[in-house]
Structures are given as C-alpha cells and as structure tokens.
Length: 119
Length: 204
Image 1 (cartoon, each protein chain N blue to C red):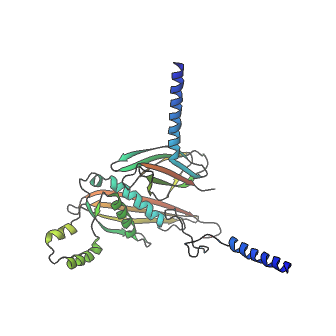
Image 2: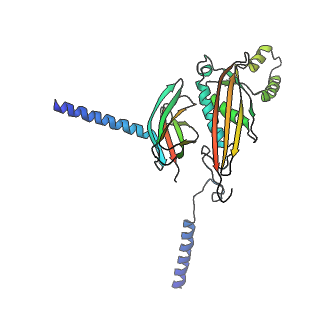
Image 3: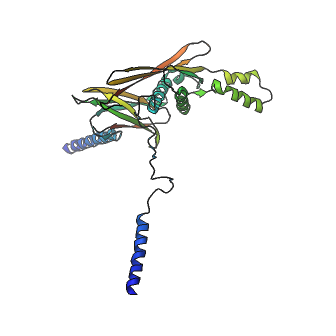
C-alpha cells in the first residue's frame, strides 16, 4: 500500500513538472527579466485561437516599457503567423492583461515572446 | 638554390594562406559589407512620432481581430461580401489610409471569413475586363459584382500637443462596418495610439 502511494506521488510530481515545462515553453522573455508573465491561457473563439496573458511589473520605482509578440503554431508545430511586435507600458507595481487573437485558421498553439530593453 | 626554393614555397604558402583566410561568407548576397541591412519588418519603430509602420501594423491587427469577432462576420452563415470605402485622413500629416485598409483586407481574406469586392476606384478596371471577356453582360451578373453585404469606412484623427519638454501625439483610427442597404452601422471599433517624445536638453 505505501508503495502504491509513493508511485502515485511520483506520478503527480511528474505530471506537475510536465505541466510547468509545457507552460514554460509557451513563454520567452528576451533581455532583462524586469517584467513577469503571471499566467496565460488560450481558448477557441470560433475558428480562431485567442490568448490571454497577465503581465506584471512588480518594481515599486520604475515604469517599464517593452514589446511583445505572439507566435501562432499549427498542429504540426509549424509557425503559421505572428503578430507584429507591440509596444506596451506597465506602470510601477501594476498588472496588465493582454488579449490577442490569431487571424488565420488552424492555429492550435502559441508562444508569447516578451523583449525587455536594457536600461 | 635551396634557399630560393624555400622562399618560393613560403611565398606560395603565404598567398594561399591569405587567400583562404580572406574567403568570407556572403555567397548569394550583393554588397553584403555595405551599410544597408535587412531588419525585422515587424519590429517596433520609434524613429519619429509620425504615423509609422508599427502604428499601421498594430492598428490593422487590432481592428481585424475585433472585426472577426463581430457577430455579423463570425456568425454569418456564408462569408459576407465586403467592399472597402474611403478611410478619411483627418490629421495634418500625410497618412496613406489605404495602406491600413489594404492590410486589414489581406488579413481578413487570409482568415477565410470574409469575401471582398473590388474597390470603387478599381471598379472601372473590372468593368473593362468584363466587357472584354463577355459579349452580353446581363443585369444579374452586374448585381453580383456590385452588391456588397457590407462596406468598411472610417477615419484617422490626431491630436498633437507640445510643452517645452514633452511632445505628445495621439492617434485615433476608427472603422465602421455599414450595411449599405439599410445604412445601419453593424460594427465599429477604434485603435488608440499615444506617442510621447521627450525633448533632449541639447536640442532635437
């Protein structure tokens, strides 16, 4: 019985790790990590994939200006399209939600890329 | 004689060596060491505060996303036929508003959710082509060509303000989807852009 419990715990830990790894691959921060992507999720809006992400600037002193882009992938993992780099400003100690939707059908996956300039 | 041979071999080796080391990449490129470089077409450009490529791209992206979510497009049984009409430039600078609508048209066509009819400006060309290819143009065929389910119109506006230290430009790009039969505006959305330029102490 204890062996079964241990196996179950190991499975749960492996699943959690896989989940974290899966989430991490959907996010890429280029440059200094002065902003954080707290959470992100996607859902289907008709024929198109929609992505929502919450970005946070947890610095109490500095307003952050940076750019982000979302890459859209099909079921084979091929890049179908990408949004233009979009500028965004987050005031100190604030969170901002971004919502983007692909304009092309057959997109099933996404990657959020955030590029923070050096100061 | 031996020394001469040694010199010759050394010289040949040097030339060969130099020749090898000076072989650079750049095959398939002309003027690869010039000052002209290709950049990321989707990168954010902040060279001046004038309406630029980033504003064009982000406006088209946002307004297309919004239009595709409108129930008149997303909920239509068949992709509606749309014609682009003029987007008025109400700013004091030259903005090619057709670039905005053309970009939106490309995105909407790629989405497969909308069909587009030729612009009014190009309709003359289409008429000419029809007259060339058909001897009898019946009214029904013309009706197919001219009857749009919706038209897209809009405005670009700008508000500029400047103090001694800061220059502020606000752009507002608004589009409308109008049913030409009833005049009803079935969708409208806008993209707002603010650009702030800090004047340097040295001069700008």
